[in-house]
Image (cartoon, rainbow, N blue to C red; front, side, top):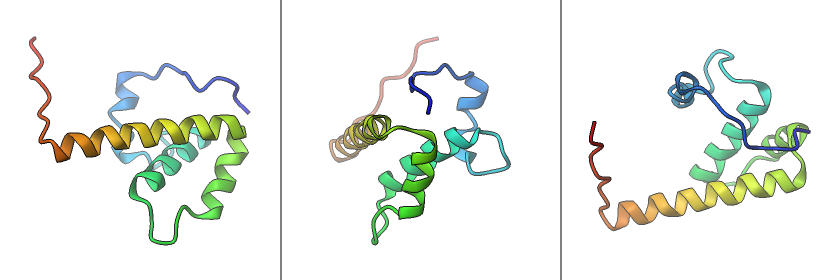
Length: 94
């Protein structure tokens, strides 16, 4: 298990996150984290699949899974509040 979830990622790779499940652009560990994130965000009617949790356990400790899950839940709550309150991010000044 990787001990530290904080990694730097190139901007080129970050732009590919929307197609994370395409041909192997991401490592198995990254793909497991992204699949978990997507499943927690969409919350399927039957809950998060056991197989997905099992795959996550292959790459992360229990503490890391909790850390990732809390991070996903926090960001999802910000997004939901932003949508509900019609938040519009300020324009970036270049």
